[in-house]
Image (tube, rainbow, N blue to C red):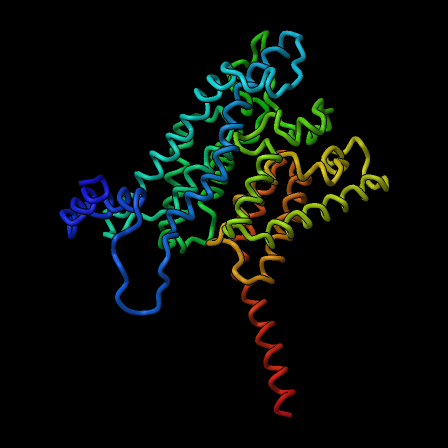
Length: 403
């Protein structure tokens, strides 16, 4: 008897018991359910919600691996810089090294373990108490969370935020498919407002920088956005920014890999190309407006807004978390807009507001996550007006036919 048959047999023994949802979660993660539908409209297919979530995780794995190497690379580069040594990025020379991987794994993997351990524990508790199946939504959320936080965030802070995000961001609305806010972004928002120095400080994005504050060999952990927000110069070139040899949240640095992940998700029809395209256009439009204001001399170089306002519009698209947010979070099919026309407006406004928040809030120059949460709230309103507009058009055509 194979593993599949044994699991099916054990599943029969769990039927009607309190812990049945917990076992079924493991069973359906490994194999498709062996139940068949008996009545009503249905679709017979092997792609269920778990398989869809697994596809998104596949698109996130390269970003995670890069984030592990980059965490180690940024640590050693910062140590070298503190000692007067300038380290130039070399993909196979000093980036993909065992030392970088080891340092990065020690830093990043605990974030992943805590994210899945705490999040799934909350999911299992709710499933057992409510007597329903364990929902699959956290499979992706559990991977997203460690990718959008600083590498050195304390694990207990992350655990507290995850409990808040899963309970308040999803379970109170009825679970997966019913939440109006993206759970991963709810977790990040909680961290920002509850522990702002750990999310907006300049010593949290590089491993070891927080502990080195005040010592002779202190190392800097400031992001590019943080430098621009302080009107400081940035030493990174285009290749560093695009490929991801820069400090930042674990998964947001490599625009190149995020782009590949976005293409994969669009090819598999999981992510909406309408949202991604319109969000990029919205960000570019807002960036061009700010560039025009800076070029026209309407704002002086001494202004706290000048650094980010004068940043070329195209550069806004490859620094910070805007690319990651657009590809992996704005396209969330649950909390995003559902109509095709609504997706254009939804995406455009996310990109537009992302750059606006980034420029006008120097204390927290990363605006994409707040912009997505804002548009999560307004997504049903956008769809409502799109549907009403379509109804009015059809009524108008009906009147013309009957006239």
